[in-house]
Length: 135
Image 1: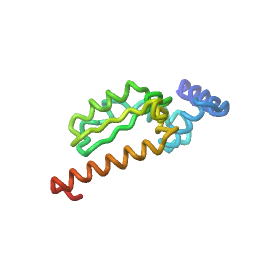
Image 2: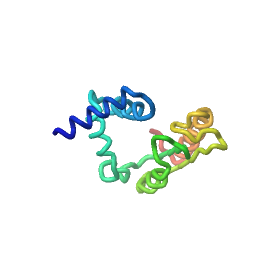
Image 3: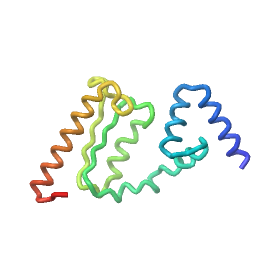
Image 4: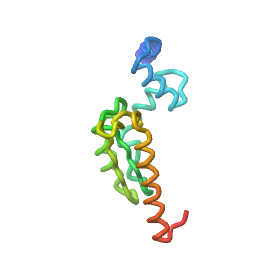
């Protein structure tokens, strides 16, 4: 219990100093709806292959990855694609510096990311209509 209090205190200090660690902790707290940094860390530690259950995904999936993402390591791209073993379809796109969309959430060229998303939605929707699937 003492280690948790110390860790929570240290993370609060990191938030006060600002910068990337503050953003990461704050963002995680927001996503987890956590009042304390340590609560958000508890959730983060549960985000692993055992708990994510990618094998249960059955719909069409589009994975967008920034080659130089500061938050999600690039090595996760292939791992996630391979984990979607039961998805109806998996389309993966890696954004690079050439398209200026290599960052987290494709910041730098959101328009390109939106074009990719809209084209994918059109392609998947057309295939479903062709197959007689109307959901």
